[in-house]
Image (cartoon, rainbow, N blue to C red; front, top):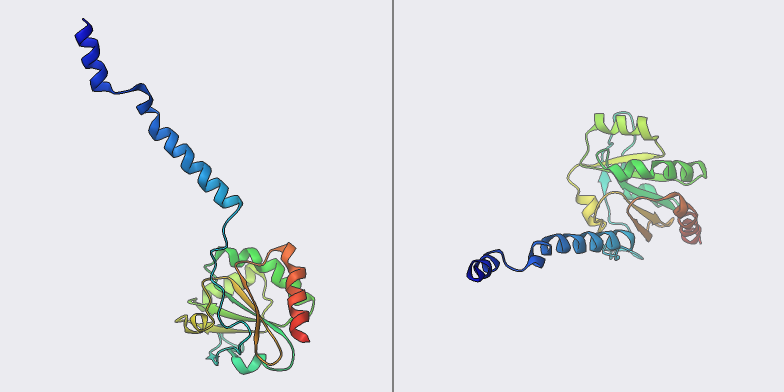
Length: 188
């Protein structure tokens, strides 16, 4: 009978082996949770910070609205240039912060990336419209020329058209004072 039990043990393997996949999955879950709480800065900053905005001329993203060109943001005052899209969930999340900045008198220009006018109209009706002008970057060339790695991204541009700051991702409520500070620095 001892031969049967030893051959049975050889077929089944050690008892701990059945728990190994569960332990590995648990370790994976812990690793993901730690990374979500403390993400590494994996965003790629634009190499254009401190340099003039690339020249561009975008058509209007919506009928009856002004488009956006690089000359429009060289009027002597700092501007925010916000790259966004109606299909971008974080863009809707940052909408209240952009509205707060617009109420504070900040000129905000929009670059709508790979969007449709009808979707953009619904987005602005739902989330508010803080933009002075919105240019349609249908092929993403202006976004790429700015070194943007996604949407949303926001740039602080000084009155001469020089990029002073790049904010990657949505602007959160606790970041509005910092954005206002960056605009004040760009005004000097």
